[in-house]
Image 1 (cartoon, helix red, strand yellow):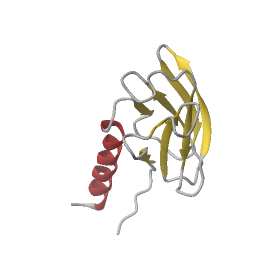
Image 2: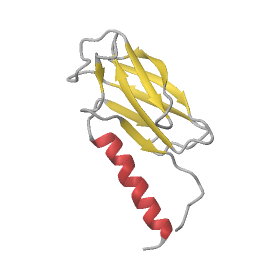
Image 3: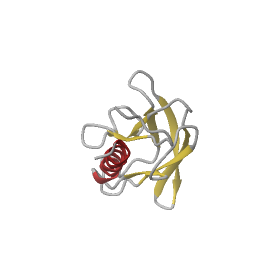
Amino acid sequence: MKPLALAATTLAVTSVAAYGAASWLRISPAQPHPGATLTVTYDPKGGPLEKAETLTLVYGFDEWRSDRAGLQPRGGRFETEVRIPSEAAYFWCRVEGRTEQESDTNRGGVWGTYLYTDTLVSG
């Protein structure tokens, strides 16, 4: 298999995994790029934060730092936008209620997706 096809297949499978684990959280666009803005939509219905009134997105682009953004209510769901740094290669997130213990971690992990670029790395 050519590196281009292998890289595209790997990214597609990783992207699907970010959405397939639970339907509570959506990251869009489906193929986010460094330097762009992505939208995170969280639907608490049926999840561990179903009764929460205030939600916060905890997110990062590496394992050492995290940021926080308030999720705004919109039609029964909660939503926020995140600007992706131009040097980022990965995005991860989890959702918290009023406290860190009141959280949705995608069943013990986090939601995440690799970021897409127009450049392929071949090995």
